Length: 572
Image 1: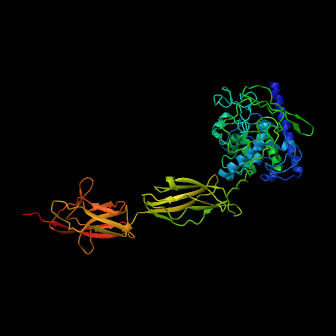
Image 2: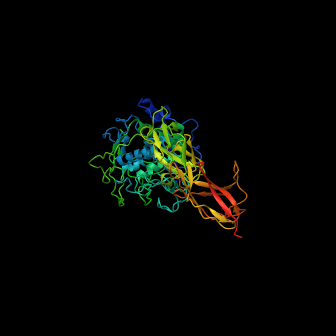
């Protein structure tokens, strides 16, 4: 084993030197540069090392073996990134149809939820090439699942990292040590955290290229990375596998695919000959032999070996999203044409109020002013399809339509996003609505909002009978009705006060009184009108010397009415 491991190390060192030469040759070819990394595409960013990764990053692949084959030194014959390109260009620049569709779908999905990351599908393609040879040349079924699991060797510390079993063999079939799984080679513990359902079939399967590509994209975007920056891209790749050689190899393929790529039928992709420190196993039996490899010619073209018959039953629930790239293994007679993916939205540069004014509403009413924001690019152009999250904060029971306090809306073609109708609750006072561009570091836009109490601009007693009572007894019920602009003022606060008859009335400390909840005499009471604006005062006790006393009713809004209460002396 020691001798074999030594040979692997020598191969890794040799490949690193070849990688550097290949990158230099690609740069010298004067082919178009990478649209994202430009002049530093051939070197790690200053200060980037295999031992330094962003805080909290793990190794998605567990630093398991990977393929170190490099692309040809010549630029692909057919540059471009469309999935509809004809089958031209070098064999190495061809990407199997389902695999290419999965990478582009992952890019589009992440652009809609984390636009600031600016994930390029070519980076997923580069990692997929290095990790599994593009799912072993695209040997996947119509739903994007590999015909047999792609498993790395046991990570038992013998030439590889030591990672004891974390999934009881659920993903990798090994209950002793973990193994990297699937076309993007996730170790089980990382997949458990980052696994995604990229093809909407209700499962997170590391052996499905749509699920694995989306998971890899989210992993690479972790920690608010912007992959258009060379340093962030280097850190992302190193977090996938802590190796400078791995970074150089991925960077080389990334640059190559940026210069041109085209679609080939599933099952016809070019397979690398072997990995840098071992071979990826092709089934759940943990066989030690290498994956089938095509014969290669001096020119670098390859004739793929026909894939084996499927060893598992295809999923019963087809994915509604991916275009069916073929009916099974082997070379299909027709080339599928996946639906072209729209270009990703660039990262927003400005999040601003789109004209929302003062937010004020009466308790229980809807706010008339909509909460609206606008998202613009660095050039001041409106950005569409940027998710914006609106959140109601503060001590309030106000909420958006449906009772939700947090909602997300996507900007339209004019770059604006409008929150649903905001409705005031019963609690009066101030609160805040915050709008944030989801997944970006842009500062939030805050809107101050106020809920005012319901009001009445008029109140009158209903009934005309004189209100009299003998001292020590109670008055008949007093009824009144409040209105606002001629309509019933429901649920309006009304203050009832026994007042003096002075020119400037004050609370009277003599005469009729109410009682509080404990039965204690009080001469001021706050009540609320019912839904029809009506109010009833019960149990007003006659007290004090015989005479006429005054009861004042005052509404929220300032309307008042004064009612006479007459206390009669007891009979002799």
